[in-house]
Length: 296
Ligand code: GLU
Image (cartoon, rainbow, N blue to C red; front, side, top):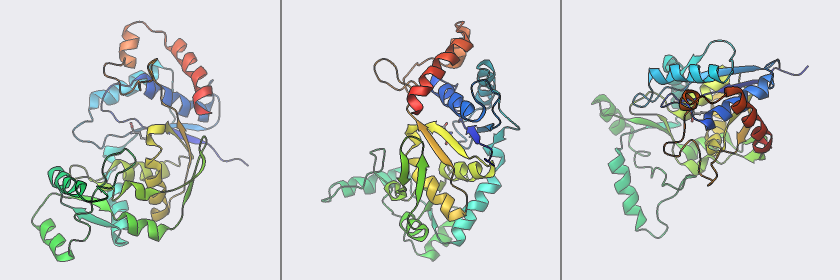
């Protein structure tokens, strides 16, 4: 008996949805339900609102409105990350009990100064998958008493994963992507990622991993800009004893100049297209045509 396919769309309500989001949502929807919506998989909606400064309630309403305009119905209740903080804290505690996380008191300026100093060294700073320098490990080896004293004094801190230790404990890992095939997980390329931010008791990596498992998501459809993040998610799945879903990282929609639609300044939102009288079913039909090309 084949098991139920469960996909999801997981936008962050930091602005109105663009065509790129709509495309991703449509791919996730169609994988589970088929274009006619009659398939027996499940398509879930999750609001990733853990960023307290950038998330806005009016954008959550905007997401519902845009998906309805698009004719995309989701199954069951909408899962809202800001209501689930204790679950992420529990996952962080588990990693803490395994001695895989440490408090990081660094300010951005402190990290930048350390990186600038290492730029003069023969090898320069280590770079992550986005080309930016990775965290240079300043707080990794603080003595336990110093950590405890700074926390007790109320010093603001994030929690980072001790990546070398975590990857060694998990051992070799694979994940599967429908376009890339079997991928060897290389989470080390990210360095010691943040699992709980100074301003939020979790981070994208931790919350997404916990929630995809909690919602029983079998197939993750998202843009290829998040391909490298999956290395971290695969590691967290292994450490937390969670299942590994299948991944479908699709190509990103670009304009005629090859610029990403989601990132381009002033690129039209679904709300502005609706206001301009764009026909949603035409748009959906055009995006579906692209899907065949971009997902394969
Ligand atoms: N919330 C993320 C975003 O809007 C997407 C997360 C995911 O699909 O894993 O970029």
